[in-house]
Image 1 (cartoon, helix red, strand yellow):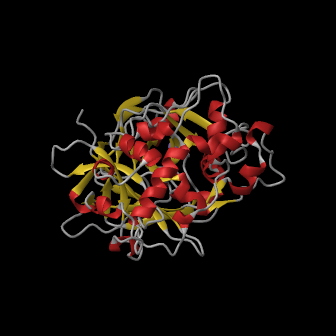
Image 2 (cartoon, protein in one colour; image 1 turned 90 degrees about the vertical axis):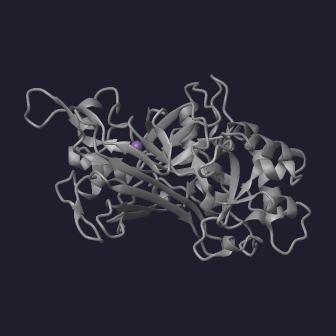
Image 3 (tube, rainbow, N blue to C red; image 1 turned 180 degrees about the vertical axis):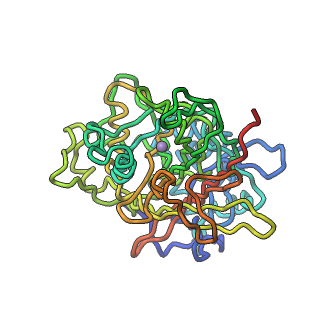
Length: 439
Ligand code: MN
């Protein structure tokens, strides 16, 4: 998509906190979430983050902030989940973004500014919910560096499966245990087969891990049997969240052959509460390349548009906060990378998902797969950083980890920045490991 006035880095909001240094939510971002006042029985409803405030879309609409297509979009977004807005498609999403950017812009006597001012709720007084009724969740495996790191631990001579360079590998995940940032879950139980043992045992996971991923939120769907062409794929994507695909490695390695992860992945998945739209991410799109000596994509996964701007430069970090023991919890950064290294693009994931006739629906979530970059300290999971737990990671704040301990909180963060562009952020996806249920 082309850049427009909403991306102008000089644009400022009349909400002063939107201009604060390091704010994730300047006027160039305008991400969507679902909230209510903390501790209240108010209905959950859609809102847009600006600085440290939330624009309640229903209240703004009732006060006359929007007209036409934008008004219809705001009406749909006032519901307890955003699926209705997602189904309206890119023209509606864009009209609402334009209207919000105009009404929130400082120094412009926009008639809708008063209606928006009356619809603000401080984020400090709000609680957030999962913003979607997620029908289906598919988790991909599309980072070459992650696949190589994991593959070399398994078989140094043949680290990649034969399909990896030909298609975006994926499995179907579980929605019922998906939660929003702040999720707390018990360490899972499962069957584990110890090396050299004759029989597996049922026990709490001993190799609990996280996976740094993005959650790609499907906007408008496609009909069964009608594949989405590569150059139309991003019209079907509303936006992106951070996603932690918590993983039980000891359970995973015993159970996953031949049909894929099951207990190892179905106990918790944590999303960040704000969906950053593809429109907001437009300034950070980059050329996508495939090394000339690698297999090149089949024709249905190849296009000039995907080559020119298929990649996204999203900066990502993983932090670990051990359970506080008396003093304040101290956080350590475990890794930092960018999504720009991913071997397959978001458009290729969408197109491949539908090429066999599968229907995507508004609110479906596609996990990007663990995001690992090529350098040291760029791996998106502990199993890579600690070499299967054999070389525990030293924490900046003291201690070390091979895998996660009870009480550990993992925080994913993400943002985009580029010369001549505003910095926009994703907020965070935070989740905490509780002890396993007693036997
Ligand atoms: Mn995953």
